[in-house]
Length: 386
Image 1 (cartoon, one colour):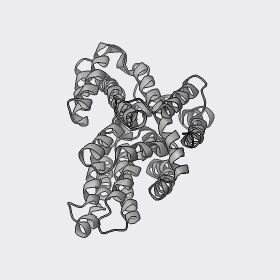
Image 2 (spheres, helix red, strand yellow):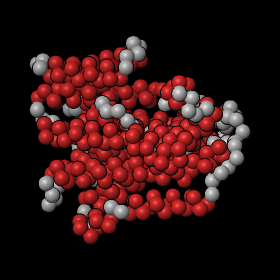
Image 3 (cartoon, rainbow, N blue to C red):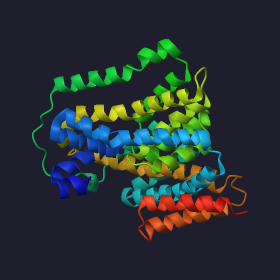
Image 4 (tube, rainbow, N blue to C red):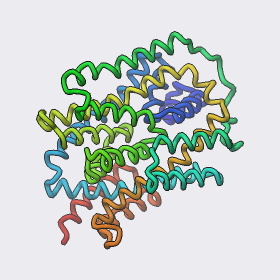
């Protein structure tokens, strides 16, 4: 986005882009989507934001529905199983890469290291809720701010042009759009149905997705796999592999999780109808808040991004997210590399693919589509070996 919109097309200047990015990092939800919405809003108002945001996610939504349908229908076919095997192994390299890169940037001092380790222990061994981990990190960062987390490099804020009437109007429209599915869900299916509960769950997930897709995926996987039992660990890993293969925000994986939950528990519906409904509800609950947050908060960007304690709280949350992503890496390693348990020998084929993907990404600087394509092909080949 920066290369195309700031450097080449010069639609937005550097200061506006940086301020917008910092603001999006303060919000729950997918940062890339929110940044696209903001840039569209900055140029053409709410209509521009809608066009930019929908253009950013709709291709992924449609494509992932198609891939998810192929997966639930043909996922056990040997050739497709082999391709997914390679993609899953490559996903481990992607998550480890994210863990290392975010760690290098985020762990700038003792406090941040402690927050990362504490988040890992709290989530992996103590069962502390994900939102509580983020809240504690934010408070710690705000109470003990580092001097270098203040956004001193930004230019002074420009004139604040937000109005209370505008904020209230956007909030009311967003609330109405969120309530709209209930007008059919509750009367037709009941408050205790899978789809009503799923809509509530993904709404809550959308409000605590600080730290990007890998962070929220750790939270969603723990809830859907271990606590609710709507999705299997194998299916969650396959969803991440498929989401990595599509354009758009990686958080689209939540749509897949909802789709598979509906497929696994169709109730009185046809399994595909149930899955499509559940996937649509998950996508709606995941992406709607991003539009509301940006349209409400965009006029406030210049003021909010110049609050030093806000910047310090964000830096602390990012540090805690390192520990969150570590729990996801551990889960993926258990499912893919050690399917028979930690005390058994790992799957050498998956391990080799993961290491190869890591080398291709980090050392050889291959593009992600090239790495995933080769991993899928090698996974298919290795599945034929004894």
